[in-house]
Image (tube, rainbow, N blue to C red; front, side, top):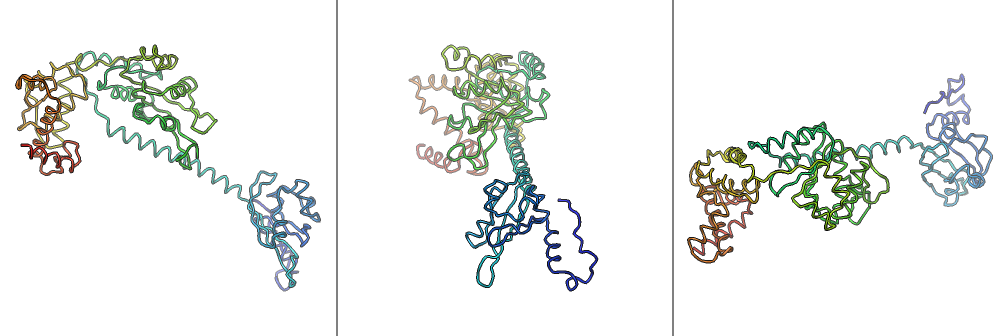
Length: 472
């Protein structure tokens, strides 16, 4: 607050030569806090300049007037002086003046020797700037939390991201086409069987787009609990529901702002969220749970599903208008059995990763590779990855043969032919599990390492190994 300096006339021998009242007034006028003084009957005696600046009231409007009348007239919204007089004790309240300034007002009664209130001195501290700083701090905290959430989500995505491995002409043509649409903000719907690599295509679209420096957020629509899906996607306000954070929380669509959001298994979205997703596509805005204020978002949507969306629309399980909004540019990702030229490159890529991780030099021989290329792969790339990891574990030497692959079809046929009896799934699975457990025990230096190689808890691994040893 700017003010003119308070002068003490020409006297230099203060306090002896300076009038005590003048000195007191000079001191009070030097205060950046507003000072308001009444007598014991609540009549205004004096105010300083700071009070005039903070409240917007002039001395001529209040001096000599009673606080009761000032409060009744509306010049003062609430009098701390009256509260102090009534309670005969110091009172502190918050007050907003007609200037728009907010202040902490403290009124303290002054007593004489007869314990009578002869005066009330009120200190008015302007906290407008402090309140503004508090709002700015809250905004900064929200932005910081947003960036923290964004970094955490992106970190998880990067940990799971695989390099793009392509060798088949069908996939190369598909990527060329996808690369062109990636440069636009057009919604893309990825269609294909489970495990074909739709997430990798979505990542490729993001990396080839103008949003590549923005966040890439993956959402598995089928994995989010239905009662939490809306708050996860769109966020919520403080206290929006039982158990909600007191600070509220931004949703994944806000985290993905200026980037791409990948809605995997979009066909699993419940009907109420289909409506809200349609609004995002149409209006580019979201509503947090518990709020009526729309928030603009700049997000590119890539969706994926292994479901027959047209059939779902016919059966009323998916909104037709949302389907058309998402299906602007459909991309059918072929299954692995239709792009067999990818298999050798994928196998080598997976083995390179495992060899580096476990300091091995294992390779797949030609016989095994032919078996892999002739197999139907109902689980696509995901199943191929599992087969390679299993064969890596159970192979005795560096060479992985067709007998190490343990492909489902071959194993089932072999089991039935050898025993010449009906296939027993339970016995078969136990046999496979025992072989994995034994191989891991032979190839790993400890129980813990063996369990970890099979993605098992050590206690579970030990219990299962003891069970099979007892059966032997």
